[in-house]
Image 1 (spheres, rainbow, N blue to C red):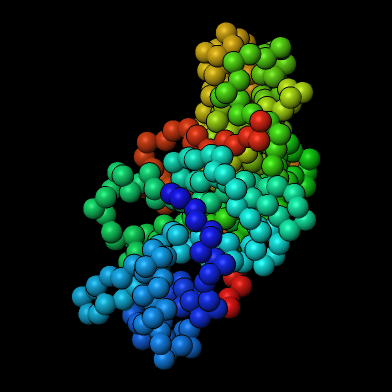
Image 2: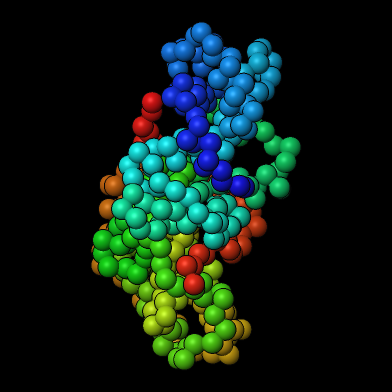
Amino acid sequence: MKLDPKGLRYMSAEEFRVLTAIEVGSRNHDVVPESLVADLSRLHGGINKFISDLIRRKLIVSEKSTKYTGYRLVYSGYDHLALKTLSKRGNVVSVGNQIGVGKESDIFVVGREDGSEAVLKLHRLGRQSFRNVKQKRDYFRPNQSPSWMYMSRLSAMKEYAFMKVLHEHGFPVPTPYDHNRHCVVMEMIEAFPLRQVDHVEDPGRLYSDLMDMIVRLAKHGLIHGDFNEFNILLRADGSPVLIDFPQMVSTSHANAELYFDRDVSCIRTFFKRRFGYESMLYPKFALNCDKEFDLDVKVAASGFSRKDQSRLERMMEEHQPNSGNDEEAYSSSEEEEEEE
């Protein structure tokens, strides 16, 4: 999905108020009626012009329900709301090239107010699922699955929370800078995805480093859940960096051993296939993972609750039956809002 931030500079405060009103109204309505948009935005006179401009810019769409015609926010509109907030904080002042795309995310280089470059990751849950369930539209209805945008926000919140805790405890992960809605801003790493690396000087050492990282995570109460060549970066000195955390779970999860063994198996399979390296030594959940720290508890205390975790896991399990590697690795060689 294309990210077009240029429209931000031309949007009026009134248009942002209308866009925000539709976002807020979407919490309780599949299609937000115009009267509610007017009330929430506190704009009554001339609101039709603002709505027409937003439709023309493809930030919202007009839809008919059984009782009325209303409006629905789409991902491009959600992008604008998030970028507006991040720009106010100085963490995204310019958007550069797209450097990664996955089944459920887009990744861009961005400029920060201090002149440094960073990585902007936009979570877009539902993109892959839409291909599999094109006729399914009940995810917007009350008492059923939450909207994809809501789930994308939870996914971004989860990634930021886990990345922040891991970074604070010395794990090799990008420095997290900020997040809002479905977006996460993080450090730009000078590294290459492991999947692009055809040769390493010492595959045994790298293999050992990665297995040690899996065990260290488990001893801290966490399992990555998608530990593979797509989510590991390799610096010039050969040291690995771990990215992509929406699949991460606690070692107290009912399927913790399954996820742990899958992470180990992914690395063993990749090293045998790519480097011709195979070791009979590999960690086992029951023998190597006595919990020493409670980072999973710290993540829950940071704002991403166990309830949020369960809801996100359930949604992803229901709509992503065919798990696979998310080719979104990048290289360089309750919701926080700020309303108008």
